[in-house]
Image: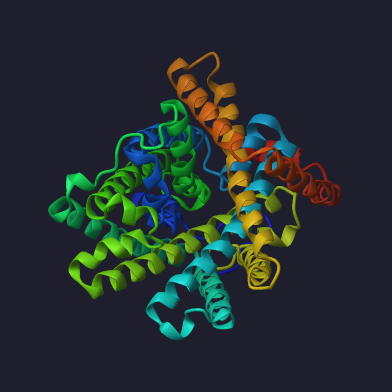
Length: 445
């Protein structure tokens, strides 16, 4: 069957994503550009940062288990939107879908810009050439969008390949560190002399950013084979695998580089890779490019899936719900690409860099808000029936709230304003589509 689907958004092909495609969607979005800088960022805090990694890993696993538990109850695409809608109603669902979509378009711009920056390290004519880097970043956004428009299967296959490729430089550094590094280079436990709890909180918040993307494997549930079993297993496994890679690679870089050099390094993985000569830095730069491209592919994919799910239920313009013959929401992909490109171009406009940096902080906050509501949805479901899962959901809630509090009051207020900006879309769309909740109830009956 190669026909286009109708506006209802029902797919025309059987699910094409198996365990490894779902695993790579979550792992591939989590492993972005952040890990390539984290060893340098953590160096001033000393080896207490490993406790921060441990705390963050436990929090991330609680979030993954909570999302997996929610995913086991539905085979509908939409992720956060579906969980919040089913637990707390249409408006809550829309706001979480809107919040998550905003985080994706902001992240799309940031990741594409990071890719262009890494490209300058390999192709000297790009280094310092703002206009050339802008064209590279925009071209990447639309290349990835085109791959996704071809179909869900194409996007999932590309994600799996890029995830496997991006793991390669991390494994290389881990091997170099533990074979040739020196334990004398590991920084002191708490060189700042700050209270241990304060140091732990600071490093936990820093390391938390590297786990954003856990949820990526939950969004396209309709395209996953045996979604209710596959998604929980895949995203939990992805979180554990990524945590092991993060901790081991951070330790490896610290083993190779003395703390004085590490603290001022702008490319700690590349500096560490110089152990094997000039080619080492090139390998790491290529790995960073693949890493950012893979993360961008995942972001574009899940952003469009979220918009599609929201539109299908009548809470966003209906054309966003259409799928093509590859089961891809082509119009939603194009709109997401256009908005991401506009924000990206703002990054390359003089005077707007600070604004762009603020947008990226908003992107992170816009992802944390759905984590909180998802944890609340699981708490509501398990309150009387599953105390073990209730404890896990409570841990995910506490962890997410602590992370949100780290954003500061100003960013939180701007986040509230961004959420409110979606309300006109919700009420306009709802007015144009009669009683979508009743239609959803009929469909689920």
